[in-house]
Structure formats: structure tokens, C-alpha cells
Image 1 (cartoon, one colour):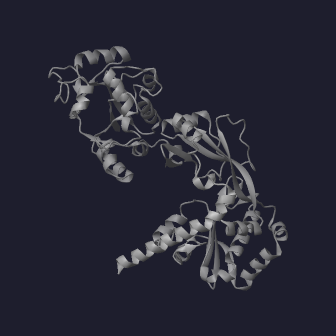
Image 2 (cartoon, rainbow, N blue to C red):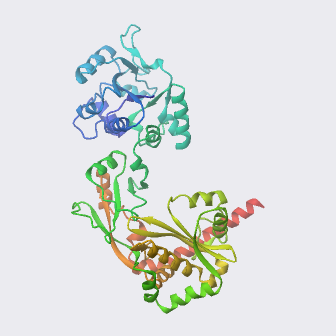
Image 3 (cartoon, rainbow, N blue to C red):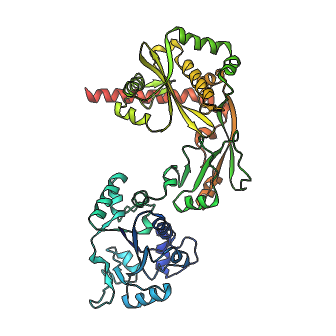
Length: 498
């Protein structure tokens, strides 16, 4: 059983707004932000496949409105009192307003003088006095672990470990809704959403999102948006909004499915993919230029053998050797240089169901290609080869094999990233029959902040905002800077070791 104690101290996710309303004594339950985080947590509790009981402790400033009460099913939730100043009066108000029987209480406390004034207490009065004969049972008698404090002090994995150990010991997890997504530096609390969703085993669709923070907004997209069509409905967008996402981005795979009647507030931007329509291997071979055919033949004559292979120990070691051959690839720093063999194995297993094509020379792995299976499409993940064998046209041989495999498995489309960010790689794709296929990327504002960010142009990456005429001349400059940063980093690391 997971027992949760929720001390609902403040009415809004914004601490500043809550402080103003408390100071002025304003109670506005009609605000859409009123107890917003509490509603999110209540839905998470309701959706959890585990046994959960949530005890909600409300102050006079956070009496639950109808929206929240409708979520507080008595089978999983119990309304309780968080004493601010007057325990008897506040108890009766809570029962009258909610029409729920109250059995437990906790006491709101603060050591900060400003907060004491906000809560209408005398200076130095840390908390209200509750008489010893008060009829309700004190929830302070139960051993607790404060999850938002644990999440402040520890990485997410460690916080989950501490929380689950506490639950196994019969302790209650204490949380404060206002810290669900934000971090409090003064009182050392939160954010604990990532840990809570893991503990409750919910929001797995959110877990799959890639979320990046830019300025004051959080932008999310599905990392597998090219593998499957992603068209969000209103229910899903509402959930994104509640979970702290401001903008949701997705691509329209128009070669498979067009987005029907997109709302007018969904911003459309131009994007592209390198796409090849695969009819059969013979058709591709006859369509590509003579130079490409000669490169594939060169690899064969040089003794390069390409075949579908399993990521066994020999293959993993070969990929590891390729990763660590050089710190610079295609004139840019190579992010996998210096990686361990175990991490290499972990990376290869990140995409279940992927097909690996190996290039072998005298039994040694000298190149590989990862082919990812999607819905009506195959995607070239990684394609790398040993630079010391660059004259053997290994990448041409690997790509030809990938096209052959796609044709044999009745795949209609093969995708190889996008075009426009690397001139030499773009030329390689074009020489192998890929075309720059225009697509639409949508940016969907799901919060007010998201709408403002889109108006300010914060939704787009800097490199995508640049016109092509300006981007291409800047690429060599970017490559030069990044290469030298890598070389300096390696030189410093070598000096430290010596």
C-alpha cells in the first residue's frame, strides 16, 4: 500500500500569486489555476494500478473546489484538515464546504517571519496551538518521508530508491502540491513529479516524450515521431499541459498520413527528410548514377562483405573500436569517442527490434548500419565505418545493403535523417537516390506560456531559424570551433593524466 500525505498549503502553483492572495485574504476558487497541481496528483492517484491511499490536508485558503472534489474518490482519497490558526473553526468550515467527514489533522508550520505574518500569526509563532483534547487524530503520529525534500537533495533514481525503501518500511510519503514541477531553493523542496509517476506507475506516455527547456518554456516531442504518426487529440494535449509541457511539437508524415483539419492555432513550419521510395533493389540499382554503382563494386572488389548480423560480443567490440578510432568525424567532434565497451553495448540495445548490418573485412567489423523499423518506413539510425579503410567505400556498401533489406521486407520507404545541415553528407544521400522531401512540423501551444513563446519565436532551434543561404557559409566556421574545442579538451585530459 502506498500512503500519501498531501499538505495543500498554497492555492496556486505560482508561489508569488499564492503569497499575494494569502496576504490580501482573497479566495478565488473559480480561477483555472486554483489547486491545479493538486488535480494533477489526484488524477495520477486515480490512474495508478497500485494500491494507493491519499490523505489531503487542506487549509482555509485551499478548500477543494468541485473540480478537485469530483476527483477525490473516497476509495482512494480522504479529506483532512491542515490547521492554519483556529483548529475548531477551520474543521467545521472544511466539513461544511466539502460535505466530507474529517478524521485527521496536521499543523501548518513555518519558521520564517514573513510567512508567519502571511498566515495571520504573531511574530515568532511558528504554528497554531492545537488543544490536547482536539477530537481529530494527529497525522503527525505516522512516520513519514518527505518526497519533495528527498527529490531536492538527490538525483531522480536515488530519490525513487529512498521513497520505495520508506514505503516498504510502512512510512507515509509526504508531498506538497506546489513543488510538483518547481524547485524551492529556500526551503529545499521538489520537484518530484518524475519520481512520483514512477512510484505510482503512471503517465507512461509522458515518460516517452523528449522534453527540452528553452527560456521559460518546456517544449516536448515524441522521439519516435518519424517512426509512427503522432497527431495529438485534445485529451492528450490537456494532459501535457497539466504535466508542465508548454509546447508540443510533431512532424506530419505526409507521405503516409496527412493531419486532418489542424486547428488554426497550431503553428506550421517547413521541415524536410531525406526520403527514398523503395520499389525493389534492381530498380534502385538501375536508377542511381554510375558513380554510386562503381563505389558499391569497389567495396566488393576490396573484400568488404556486408550482411545482417546480431549485436553479439564480436559485433559490439567492432562497433566500440569504430567509436574510439577518432575524436573527429565529418569535420566535427564525435560524441561517442572515449566510450566504454559496456556503454557501447547499452547503446546498441536502446532500440529493440532494430536491424544491424555489419561490414566485414577479413572477419573484422569495419563498419555498421542501424536500421530502425517504423510504421510503413525504415530509418537509417547510425552508419559508421573505420576511417583507415575510407578508400574501400564501406558506407556505400552498407547503404546499398540497407536498401536491399528494405526491398526484401516489402518496405516502401527508407529515411536517412534530414537535409540541409551537412553539405557533404547531403551529397552522399542524393547520390544514393534520396530526395529532400518537404514536410510540415507543427508547434502546438498547450499553455499560455507556450502561446507567448511561439509569438516570440522561441519554439525553433537557432540553426533552423537561419536561412539556408546564411547557414551553409557558417557551417565550416561552426565545425572549426567545435573541432578545436574537442582538441583542447583532449589535450587538457592528457595533461591531467600525465
